[in-house]
Image 1 (cartoon, helix red, strand yellow):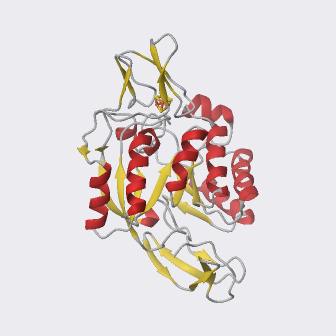
Image 2 (tube, rainbow, N blue to C red):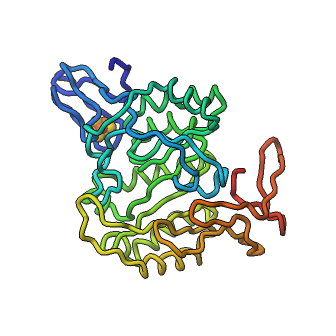
Image 3 (cartoon, helix red, strand yellow):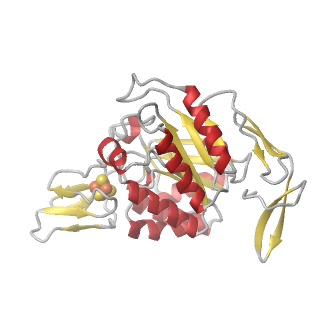
Amino acid sequence: MEVNAAYIELSGDRKKLICSLCPHNCHIPEGNSGFCQVRYNQNGRTQLPFYGQISALSVDPIEKKPLYHWRPGSSILSAGFLGCTMDCPFCQNWHISRNVEAITKTMMPEDLIKAARESGHAQIAYTYSEPLVHFEYLLAAMKEARKANIANILITNGNINKRPAHELLPFCDAVNVDLKAFTKENYHKVLHGSLDTVKSFIEYSFHQKIHLEITSLIIADFNDSKKETQDMIDFIGDLSVDIPWHISAYHPSYKWKDRPYKEADLIKTAKRARESLNYVYVGNTPGFNNDTECPCCNKILIERKDYETKIRGLTSKLTQNEKKTFCGYCGSPVPVAL
Ligand code: SF4
């Protein structure tokens, strides 16, 4: 449909469109799309044929995003899209991220906000495949959501250039960013993304005081070396030891169907991470204690079993016009948005 596309312009010789939304900075010839498969050059004009095309719409527990420190126990209207700025060979959602022929239904930004309002959900997650390739849609939906007092939650690979990231993030209330590896080579050659860009997205989100959680899928013989996982831990810890880090078990998928899943390595990484970071959670694997404990008195503050959540000991109060959360036992501040 005809929508004003952002961060894309005609080249000097008028033969290509140059898109600067993500680090691919695609030069798109006439009749083609960019790497993401959703931004097209048709007769020298940008077409966004997937604007408002929603590949999945459901209500999820917030813990499924995963967000463990944002309104624990709440549910969220979650919308998925098509296309992606990366091509991870282990993608768990490849049927929508790399397949633009997947079935969708049309929902304009105002329809999405209406659906959230009518279903009684005060928060929307932009999720499943990579939302950021639909920058124009996100901006419109997030602005509408703000007016309707609905929180915007972005679940993303963070692989977007600085200018659009800085334009969009002020409308986000919480983000979960995938940190998929910690070498430039892994990001570039295997995932078709940019480590520096993702790091800068995470840093900017943190410094803008947007609620931030980070997720890493730990994959045997790819990103699970002691050095690479320690680099991830150090990067997060240097920002704040209070940023929740979700490490997830990899299950063979897409192009890497034969990779082994090594639970012992995942557990080892989790234990090491817990020596440096206050909140480390393990997903996609049963039997791991994912309760939130107070780092000062070690009492359980939030108890979790799968997606069932019980808040045990948290209090909140207004301090300088800001709602803050505290341990109900020892009174220490706890980074949880209730
Ligand atoms: S958003 Fe798509 S078209 Fe634009 S630079 Fe990235 S991959 Fe290329």
